[in-house]
Length: 279
Image (cartoon, rainbow, N blue to C red; front, side, top):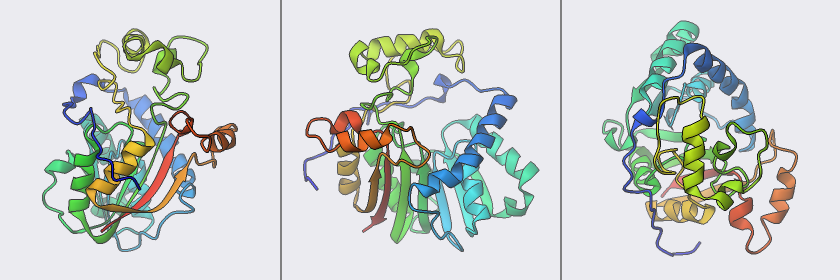
């Protein structure tokens, strides 16, 4: 692992949830239901669901709560979900109360940045995070906070995609409103046109104007950036899977092969699934 110092241009970006419109209830419910179904596939990319029995589990970027609910049903003693979007936290609280009352006393959700979570230092066994790290601004700061809440030897289990320099790393924003999606087009047309396309076409965030790629929630970090951030924050990588194939596109095996070609790693690293231990 290179000892090169990691610098993150997004570290000083100030997040505001005003860039994200509140979706209607029907959309939120459909999205949640899809995430519940995808939980099993998500864990399969790590080789299976970890043993959560009796564990204190915290999720960073819990969204609508599907993975937290999965963890509680799987036997976690206590599950804490954090998200920066208040409407998602409200939905998660309501869905647990309405549909999962058996785990309500073991599941909690907070509209809170992990930096401001000061009551769980050294008490969390496992931190989980799904499809969030590619959106986090100031990743090393967040990793240091994750390390703070973990007990000694505790695990961070995170999987996320797509990374920005991969074929559709702009999350498809450049193609919104158009019929054809062209791989790597966002790198060709540049950030300004991606942002302009988002402002013009994004149907889920009407009336909201973004001004930078960071406003879209994309930190543009590469695999080596993440690995350096893990290292500098004091984590040891226990296991890493690049471009997991289970449930993924049929061309993912090709990207796994191309990823080994010098010079193509940044452009063919679509996903990272990492298990890291606090040292």
